[in-house]
Image (tube, rainbow, N blue to C red; front, side, top):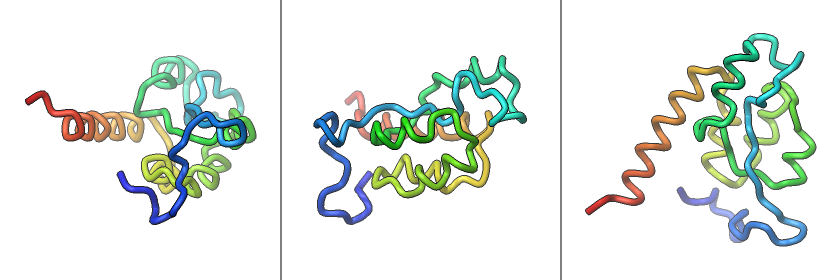
Length: 115
């Protein structure tokens, strides 16, 4: 995945001011910000790779357990294409997590073939 044509994309993780970490798009405890997601489903899907994106730590801290509508803006602005793609989704449900998980698995096989 190429960065969005930016000379200095977010490619150097964990330097003091540019620390990168994993954002759980659907939080494991969604509370009132995610009323359409059952807490049991959230527990089952929050830690799946299809639900995780790379994001600058400061931005991740800012969005916390916010609703997807609020997170979308931050995710869409990321220079990480796979993160920005999530921000382009109109909704974030179990179905989107499953689709993304399958796509990431396909990318993994292409990127790291066994032969």
